Figure (cartoon, rainbow, N blue to C red):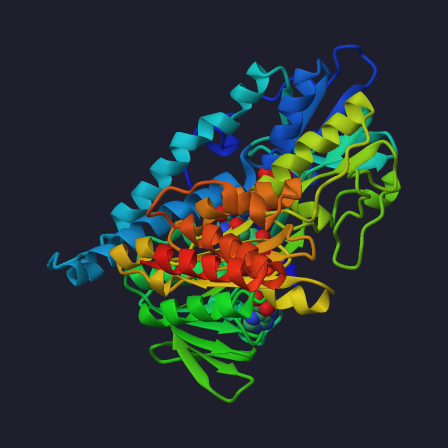
Length: 514
Ligand SMILES: Cc1cc2nc3c(=O)[nH]c(=O)nc-3n(C[C@H](O)[C@H](O)[C@H](O)COP(=O)(O)OP(=O)(O)OC[C@H]3O[C@@H](n4cnc5c(N)ncnc54)[C@H](O)[C@@H]3O)c2cc1C
Ligand SMILES: NC(=O)c1ccc[n+]([C@@H]2O[C@H](COP(=O)([O-])OP(=O)(O)OC[C@H]3O[C@@H](n4cnc5c(N)ncnc54)[C@H](O)[C@@H]3O)[C@@H](O)[C@H]2O)c1
């Protein structure tokens, strides 16, 4: 796998190449060592910098490109802005099912991308160098490389500056928060087809007519659906038997049906073997013997951590076979002075994880705390329509653990889903022997929002009966988890209650259903 380097996307203020970023003095205020040197100014680095400055520490953030990182410039923010436009187009086209006729839906891709850029520019000030300085951190533009267990060299990489030997800085603690880049598999002919990635797709000025998406994970499904709804003919090729292979297969099958409704051709269980040029574009050959014609290909097969040229060895920091920095539960590396946070650690790659990591590692480093990361209740949401949201144990994994029960509520007769005529969806709760919620998967509109109470429940060890006794507003999608919890409580009562009580419960359940 090779790495792609990020490309320019906007001309917003925190891009040093367009705004003449000013680097702060690299000598620490006490003249000896920085309390915390942060390498990388993405989500993990930014949260760490604000946390450390809040503790009164002398903190220096070194960022090689633009503060804000992947999430702001090429990840969550542009992808959700693009999806908002795509979903609006699809809603307009399908409004006819409510008797609302929206004739002649036309997508202007240039205007869609203007909306995407405007979204970034609105959020960008939260992550800018000036905001970090206002919080009390020092910010430098440059590439940092660890040079010993307590020093790093910072090389200014702004255009017009000569690389030179760089400036050596000393630190009491350092945080590696260098993130990751899209991986490109070595497939014959792929490089010649100038593959797009989540870094470069934002520079498109025209909608590709035929887009091949390699990988049916979060990026492949989100961007595949976005481009299909904006007007591209999209094919998704996923080597695993299901889309979103980390999620419950039932959830994946509902998403597959929705993507097929968008006109997307999906090939599961097949690999791309080679790519060759054709007169009118490109053609991919798959391991199942089929061919896929396309104009552009988007590669979304996972990510490579940024550790290749970081001086890990000189600093005594261990990395694993994939290049991820190895950390313990407290996010400390094999060098006790050095910590790591976010995508570079190999923990689930989400902005909320990067942010929590940044705060936790900094508190442990600066205050000497021993807080551990919670890996059991990390929420994950794929922002397709329908959304696929999950936390904890996936329902299909429940069988692998003893004593777990799955409660499933199909959305076909969930009143809110019926009123909106969006009945393709499901809520599944995974409960342990004591009825505690240890996992949940929801597919449907705003599933990410519905998930929040289940994340809290799983984190706090709440039981189905706690959820069942909390009144939920009618009609909401929150009815899905509520009904699943009630169903569980009822089944437990049925098991233990005498026949007369069971009859009363059954009649109550019947009345509730009417
Ligand atoms: C298309 C897409 C959509 C996504 N959508 C979501 C979503 O909806 N929700 C969600 O939770 N997550 C989403 N993610 C994932 C999320 O963007 C990442 O998990 C998150 O941004 C990781 O943050 P980070 O701070 O670890 O790394 P990054 O944001 O990558 O920051 C690392 C920074 O370090 C800098 N750097 C690297 N090496 C050096 C060096 N040697 N010296 C100095 N600086 C250096 C880089 O320039 C970069 O700015 C998405 C990702 C993609 C690609
Ligand atoms: N909504 C969100 O939170 C969100 C959205 C986008 C990205 N992300 C984060 O970004 C990370 C990277 O996203 P991603 O989609 O690149 O990775 P991913 O790991 O989510 O999915 C990659 C997919 O590509 C498949 N694959 C791998 N090699 C392949 C090959 N040669 N041919 C065909 N398929 C192949 C894998 O089986 C997998 O399903 C995700 O893990 C996620 O954490 C999050």
